Length: 184
Image 1 (cartoon, rainbow, N blue to C red):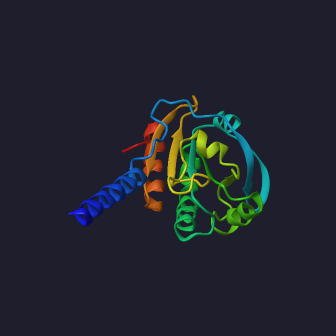
Image 2: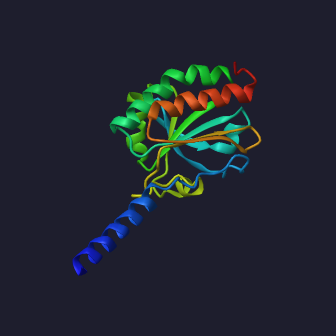
Image 3: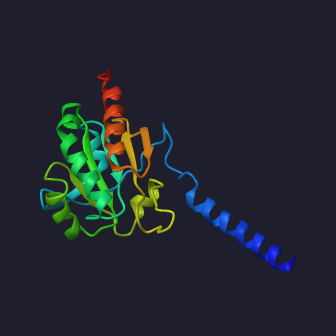
């Protein structure tokens, strides 16, 4: 009996841990004001200072968080965003990816994976990652895979979380089309 009781407690404890790790992420909600930030970024291998407030003056921003440059899923996602960037640009939107990677890594990633199409920003201290509730459950210093569309008014108009990197591109593009009034 005692062995069964211990096994049951172990199972319950394990389920609680798994449940806590797999709970839906506490992303920013629709209508929330997107936190302002300025951080080092890279585009086409060159570094610059990315300021979301200045970028929003030009149009909506697709801000996507990714765990780590040059990993399979993050490279696939970057390729997909690179292919779609001309469509985002036609709709007046700016795409920017953000991770905890250092700026030197992102300079290389901006050319190789992002194909010189959009900027990637460095958040090595995870300040912006935390501000956007985009921390990875298992590794809080890293970003989870989450995308936001932020309207010119600085408010979140769309959020998508999920492990499928290409779904982030498809769903954010649909949200930008809807925002611009060009959705089918």
